[in-house]
Length: 231
Image (cartoon, rainbow, N blue to C red; front, side, top):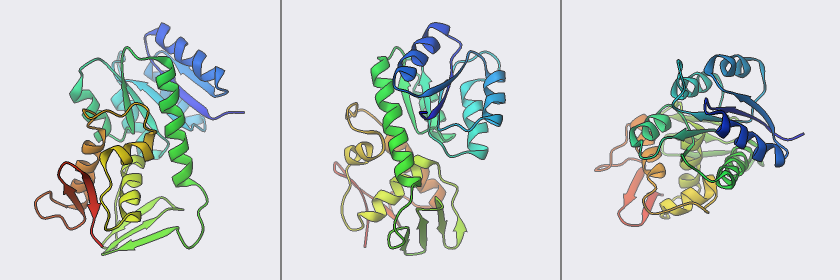
């Protein structure tokens, strides 16, 4: 049996289409047209990924995203209206891992789902004891438990933030481009230069780590190239 995926969208044609494509890929789909039933499902079902439309009647997709992040770390993909930049940024702030803009090609959504599940399993899977803890200048990243500590205090990171920090630490001393980070996290078929997903995640990481662009303790911006953590 495939992974369990929650789909919430009040536009029935879209929800039904997404269900069809995901079912064809052997995923088990829990489809809802409203938030109330979706929230009940979240509480009683083991889920591996959620696809949430932001514009829902009553409780919106952002609220559902927040409720999921209170308890769970599985990936969340938000469906947003065209040009709704603030919704995208708010979704990422609340812990979403990716977003896709309506109207979208179903095959693109399937590709994003596969990329998210690959990344989630990769960074939550069994890793050899030699590689499961990274320590760097007061920062401790435990890959097996998906925990991060800064100066012995826990950092509450979303899965995407955790993965970005892990990749940067793994490549200490080397610049990692936004495109490479995007490829590592989501697969690269749909990366373009205007995509600000990585930039938003880096900004949130810095805020949580009390890091600054001008005088970084950890994440340094190499303008026009990418990001690095000094050795």
